[in-house]
Length: 493
Ligand code: LFR
Image (tube, rainbow, N blue to C red; front, side, top):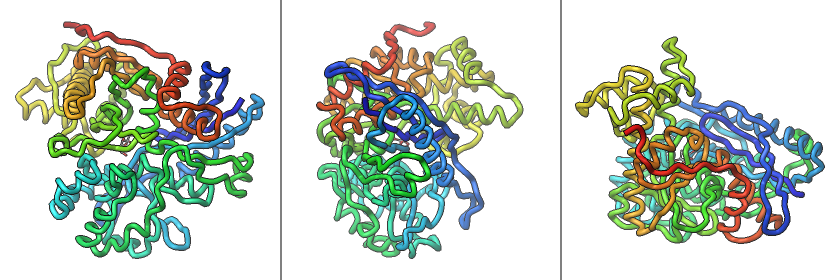
């Protein structure tokens, strides 16, 4: 029996899971155990340009090492060998390194306020149509390329020798080897979505418009596909974790890429919502859609495992709900998630539906006030109670899923018969029911740990424990998961 460690870092917590692959040929499944969980979130500090939001990278590193140690202990207890380690995390954010290998600063958080207006400025210079025709990426204010442009006047910028996305960064600390895993690299804006390599024309255009950036290509590592063995744990890491020279495998290092591998679909006629802090709503394709219509609709072509394309859109997600609960807590009215969902289930359906993707919902802050303002501006009843507010958030999310599904299926021509909801949000029964009702599709909810399962099966195939294409890997995921199905009947009228 082989075991694999999945390090899955999300915007609110990091998790380290031990996945033991058991069962004979054709009946393999993954027995997943969470061995460590640690908090994560934006850290606000005063910056030279106002408030700056960062990630606490050292905390994530310590959590990863502690988790690896705990995974080793559990593997020994169970008498299984750890055959691989894979890391996935949210996308776009990165650490900047000097030539001597030192980390120059804590990575900025993609909700950092200084990014406001940068994307428009950059695309105005580069030509939005031309740019999308190469990278196929939706315009989000925080795509890595816009973050780099915003960073070019920072005092440390002239020292930057290497730019590493979070999973590549942690992988480089574990192994001493730096790569750029393609699924995450595809969220930077610097990759050619067709060749799956860094785009010379995009990098040249950025350097031409913003000479202070210097030679970006020289600061980026070579691209690798998921399934590549990056390297082995260094001796220092072996000492710190009690593990041997375990291989670190590049998985779909963008958490959404791993989550899409972790969709328990039987064939290609499916859509998915990877539901967490963000909701990523889309379909899986064999080739990017780079048309002007697709650009206008702001649909993204992020790259997936095995040459696939994740044709999707970001919907603001459960972030709006978690920030709402946080706002209430800070105001002294603590409401638990369970209480909030119970109240929402009893509230009047679709009383107020707002555009949750409006930019005002992106930064941390007082979401109930922003929802009230959006309701007022749209001439809708202002949610007052807990139930009304939370129901408005969930109705608005389900409505956004419906809109995005309509767009991605129309623009890609993909016929879809089922909607898979994976990730933490798959446990939100009310949202699943509202989603089925809004989209008219049966919703299959689960696995909760879709990203970790997707991470494990890609590693297991890389070292020969599993074999087969994505459909075969998804059979393993399905056998390893508890799923719930919601039919698209109307929800309380
Ligand atoms: C989800 C996710 C999204 C990405 C956002 C920011 O966790 O990775 O796919 O757009 O975080 O990186």
